Picture 1: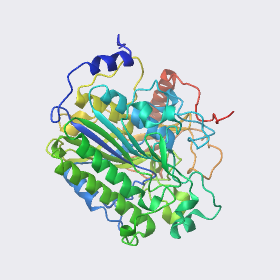
Picture 2 (picture 1 turned 45 degrees about the vertical axis):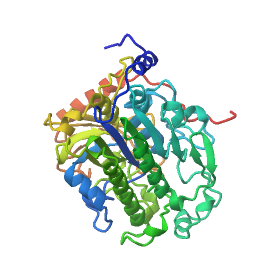
Picture 3 (picture 1 turned 90 degrees about the horizontal axis):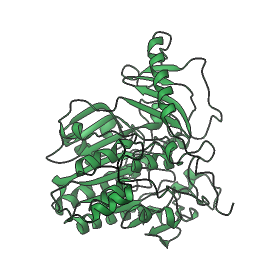
Picture 4 (picture 1 turned 60 degrees about the vertical axis):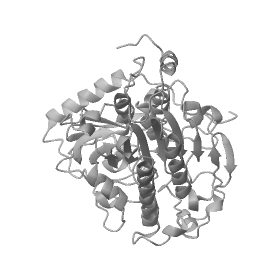
Length: 463
């Protein structure tokens, strides 16, 4: 259905309404990790890394076992989370330059509706903390997308590296200064290179500050950790605390951060009115061995459309409101925008296609099953795989981010039953041609309905 109002007109209309007061509408906090593997948390099966805060959050909230990122690498994944739209619809993916870089000329278009713009237009306070990676120029930074403030790094923490030394050794020797990454306050650089040994702590302190600053009004906080993306750095309090090595130290510091956020919500008196979502942008970067995390029993990792590349460890908390339990139905970061809009009473403009579903029924316990019954797995600009129910068909395959150069196109699509075989080891396409036919038709229908736009990622400053 098409709406009569444009998004800008809707925002102006909402700005004229009386401001909402704390308690009337829920707050939202998204804690988003970078390259976290499905098997990296103790609540998701890691035998040596300890994550007690996330374990408790899962025990009293919801643990989603089939929750997906919008893409298998950083930039398109983050675009999908914030817009509720597949990145092929807004140019935030590419078959050549997979993500944005420090010399990139573009970023997330201003025409996109984001969680922040939708909620801010409805009277919510907003702040972004951490890694952005949707454009480092002022026109594309969080402050251009209705975040009132921004504190973080504009792209991945391994970019602008000035040394050719092995990245594992750089981390083990704590040579943080060779990564010439800037720390921004809004649009201004306040530290370069940023000391990444303290980055998780500083992101956490900023988030806690914003919780207390915003507590009298409804708010949306987007805390996007730079880690556990390589290079791995952790604060002095977390050195060698984990039996999981440096990677374990990093994860345990992120778990500490989750605990600090929960504590701040309680101290501010808003915990029972705040929905917290913890998830990640894509799977583990496996080429970095012990510094790259694990996808557990899932196949492959970052950069691939196998389950390990896009299925993420996800925990959702809302004390007193959420229906606790383990959720086996599907969900995705694409679903956060429509879910938050529904819970906040915000009607999204109908002048564009959204790829997300409203999960509020499952969260609150008023619906028995998730409305998401399918998932489309994109590698760059190409559709590689489709899941429908428990079956997943691969039309093209490619291994992790750095490795296999060309996609493999099988003679017929590969088919896996993700209930019986979540590790995607046993192709059952010959036994179920009718399922392959159904998913192939679904893929064709989906692609026919996608209005693709040219990729914005290849453009370089000065060219």
